[in-house]
Image 1 (cartoon, one colour):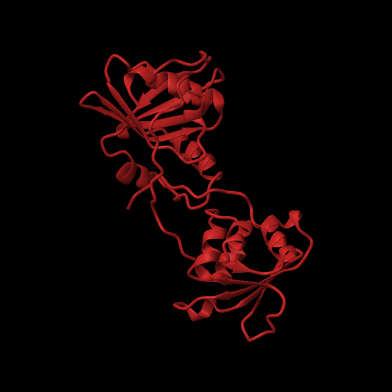
Image 2 (image 1 turned 90 degrees about the vertical axis):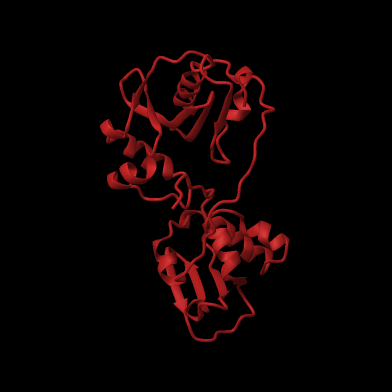
Amino acid sequence: MTKSDLIIKKQVNGTVKRFSKDNHPEEVENLYETFAERFSGMLVRGRKWWLQAVYHDLTLAVYYDENKTAAGYILYKIENSKMTVKEFVPLHNEARNGLWNFICQHDSMIKDLEMILSETEPLLYTLQEPRVKAEVTPYFMGRIVDVEQFFKQYEWNWNNEEKEVILHITDSFAPWNNVTVQLKNNEITIVKEETAKENGIQIDINALSTIMFGYKRPLELNEIDLISGSEEEIRAFENVVPVRKPFIYDFF
């Protein structure tokens, strides 16, 4: 974006306060954790990670609502007339507008603005001129290493589906993942021995990882023949997998 895109939105009643690594506020850690719950793949950050791996040369700006409650933050730097926002984390639209207005108040200092946003962040759509240059950048790859342990820790949408879901999983690199999994009534049953495969969904570990991390949905992968099963089985699987997009801000 350029300086001409920095048009202030509706005024909000909150305030923005700046911090550095030296006076790092604990409340920003809570903001991040709340934000991270919306996605799959976000890194768990402790205070040590914040201080050693997040700040670097960045400034932290936290938005507080009129009740003095922290509701969003950005991590940014200004260099050579360019503002780079490395993290944009609003918990609601008031915080989104407050943080954007804070950015706009730097229009006398910058000519260009670059922001790293999640694919689901609606900020650009709300701008007066939403036709700004945007790029989708592939980042980390994900893989399920242990299906059994992963499934036990996964947050399934059990209330969305009463039908049984059977998954016949194949993994050419990790043979312990060559299992049949039954999902039914809040229970996960792993069947490691060979079972009849007339019923159930045929799926390899790559397609399974893609679905479980939220990058694609079961119906989408069935459409392009990357998983197979009856329409009823695929829809039942679709229903128990929560809709949650993958995203990560950290790099290591």
